[in-house]
Amino acid sequence: MLRNLYLIISGAALLLSVWMIFIWVPTEVNQGLIQRILYIHVPFAWASMVAIIAVAITSLMFLITKKIHWDNLAQSLAEVGVVSAVVMLFSGIVWAKPVWGIWWTGEAKLTTALILFLIYCAYLVFRNYFPPGGARNRIAAIIALIGAIDSPIIYYAAQIWQQNHPQVVVGPLATQESSLSSEMVITLLTCVLAVTLMFIGIVWVQYKTISRKGLKNV
Amino acid sequence: MKNWLKILLIISGKDMLIELKSKEIVVTITLFSLLVVSIFAVTSSNPSNLSAEIGSGIIWASIVFSGSIAMSKFFSHEEKNETLNAVLLMPVPIELIFFGKILSLFLFLTISECLIITAFSILFNSNPLSIYILIAIPVFNLGFSCVGTFFGIISSKSRSNEILLTLLLIPIIIPLIMFATELTRAGLEGIASQNFNLWLSLGILFDIVFLVVLTFLFGKIIEQ
Image 1 (cartoon, each protein chain N blue to C red):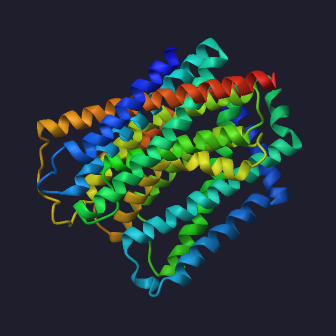
Image 2: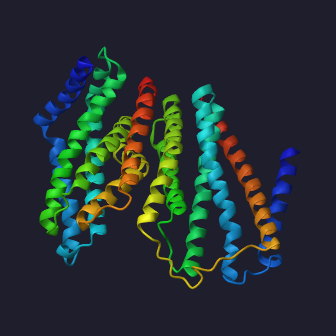
């Protein structure tokens, strides 16, 4: 009952956000149609960053309590988080080309997001390559924690790097500041809510699948 | 304190002695680093006019790749011969074993860096040796060997240890690579490095954070 209600609410939120993105929200004056990528890019960036923080927290909880459900949750969060990061990176690249005139730049947030994505890919690869068991789960949790400890250092390094290498942003709209109208803000918030609901739903399904697999192996 | 240093030298001396007899890691590093620098040299139309930015990238890409290959070889030997398990039976603090391995890798990395810098100087007709690179090398080596020892021991237990070590190691040490590349670039250009203090503080911060955290976590992975 609760599951069906959740499916209806999150499905409705997704449909509403699609309608808002393509029909309801006005087109931005400076960037034109391409600006609508914002409503995909930002919610997935939010979901992937929440996933990374949540993986670190659940891994820490697993190390402290040694309860397997924390590890299963960390794995499902990492898997869905990595997929969200792929959407974030791809939508960002597609958006940057017409707006900034370049596909990629060494901006601190971009560099940090890319490296964190690589760290969590390595975390998932480790889980697949290492022989299953208690040792793998504990080491995977340690890797997730190391990734979390490394992230502020990566951001700091990327910021100093940015100071030394001024960004080449040559697109026609590179220097124009644009602000969001109230309709745009409402659409963006609806999209963030819809993606968050979808994210929680997929993580939950994935968590259940991993837990069942674990029970089967026992 | 004197005793600790002695144990450290014994652990590291054991690795050096094995290497002196087998010469496997040094030969691998030498050939691999020469190969990487040569590929860049032959694919560049005018190696003498290489920009400092690309030059520093070539040097550190070669060091990172040959270093990670040497590490995976080093730890797969330990795993195959179960020598690490034997070392762990020593009645010494576990942290000292970790530091001993770091010292061994530090020395192997220094050898590989000397070779790569020499090969780069000859093939690209430039001199990367400067005060900046001399500062960058020990700071980089300490962080790289610390993270490398930790992940090397972890990945030696897996079926694809080489690829796993590289995948785990390189994203984590990206800040160190940025630090080393930036200082080397300043050295190659022959100008004072911008934000030198910031870069140096970043490199030292990385080393301290990972040395402390990984020394603490080393005991946890060894328990497994």
